[in-house]
Length: 117
Image 1 (spheres, rainbow, N blue to C red):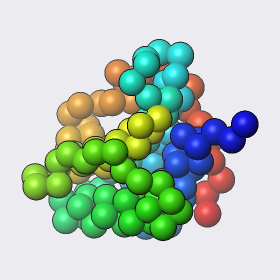
Image 2 (image 1 turned 180 degrees about the vertical axis):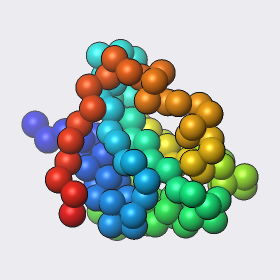
Image 3 (image 1 turned 90 degrees about the vertical axis):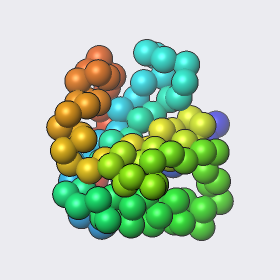
Image 4 (image 1 turned 135 degrees about the horizontal axis):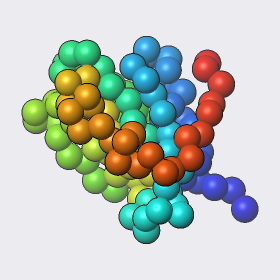
């Protein structure tokens, strides 16, 4: 059985690596929460880059037949959340990432490693 959540997370990370997003990570959280299976976290140094990256991720995932269920944060551009059901993609302005420390909140989650493209 194909894990579509893992495929979405992998594609999102590939896009983020290609666009030189900062510190892209995927956390496998399915044993810690029922809200999703994977959490993607990346950041950018400039708010405009946060918005641009989020639009690019959403567009390229759509091109691969994955449709976003919900999105939040485009107006402010400090923390954009793209909800793909099994995958929550968090694209943060670097100061927000430093402040909220999502990796620490989910520190018990295994971190998945993907080859940099």
